[in-house]
Image (tube, rainbow, N blue to C red; front, side):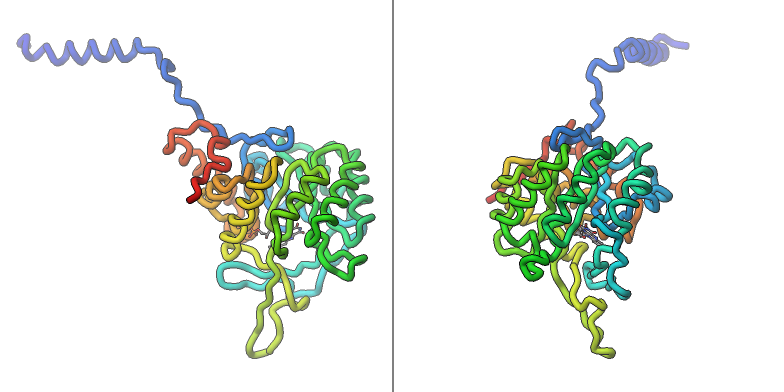
Length: 334
Ligand SMILES: Cc1cc2nc3c(=O)[nH]c(=O)nc-3n(C[C@H](O)[C@H](O)[C@H](O)COP(=O)(O)O)c2cc1C
């Protein structure tokens, strides 16, 4: 072997030695951190499932390990069990779906005894969604959850018709929202998240009402009122005639409302409406959301949270970011 021939080998050897001597973690690669803090609670990621689209968690757990979620928001519960509206109560629409389930649920007693207990073993945020048809019903149900430590937070579904005002949604009046949040705060010791209805003219005013009542965070949006029609039977697609529109069709409205609310309140905002990918979640977070709920998209891809989690990490790495919190509210508006 000639000297010349030996040179590269020696260099290679030297290089290898140098390489192996180099401390591996001199410039440590930080794992992208997806955790977010909301109302004093740390969620391992900003991915939550939306109320009414994941039941009480049992079915979803057969598809993926629920521990991968940041939070689960369970189906609205009321004081008494409710069978809901007769079928058809869901109808597929272009870019979305209509539903008028009619708040079918097991009632708070069975919920606490059976459904909530199921979530005991999971290390995720459990957000219990509460609905009611009167002021007193909200307060009573929230009070019944006060001694259930597994109910980390309550999301108040205020898109229900208020019987005492002739059926106008609670969520349509800032003073009603303030009053109801104030009342449930007195009976439930942990965070309260009013979930705002988009079927209003001034979402910022409603959000301020919620904050004035003591809301710890605000989630939005619930579904938009809509209708579908079968031209042959001449009947609406739903037995309730009207229903709530969800899915990709409502995402631009949801983004706009989330951003509007983010600009006027100091509490964290949770985005909901048509999110079906990590890109959508990022859009919501840039608009100000601290977490994002996946709803209708779960019917198409039930293990979507796993894909979204993976892709959020990829996004952070590609952007040279270490924490997802760095993007919250960072939209650069014209
Ligand atoms: C079938 C179905 C049932 C729902 N049930 C509830 C419910 O019980 N309580 C509630 O607050 N929202 C309910 N929602 C609204 C969702 O939680 C969510 O706010 C809405 O669908 C918008 O998000 P998405 O477009 O990602 O689905 C329901 C939505 C669907 C599609």
